[in-house]
Length: 71
Image (cartoon, rainbow, N blue to C red; front, side, top):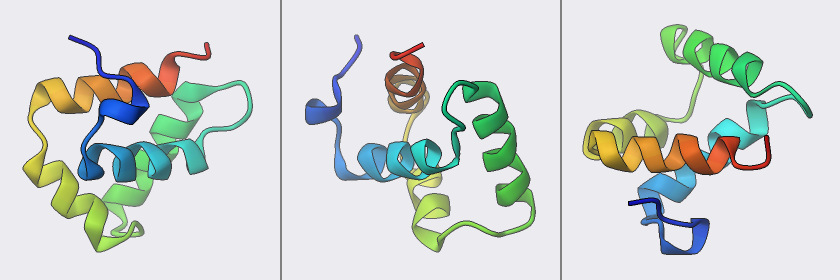
């Protein structure tokens, strides 16, 4: 079940904000690729790694769904 931004927990909102900051205006795939690159280079806040470790697959899917909603 999709959760809107207001229904997300703090870890989901933090991950969504991080992803949104990397997404170019019209290309969400480039933003996700940049996020993966930064994860690999350990160039994201430690809270992002913590959130990714805590969130289950459904919660991460909700974040990605919310990220792609405008597209």
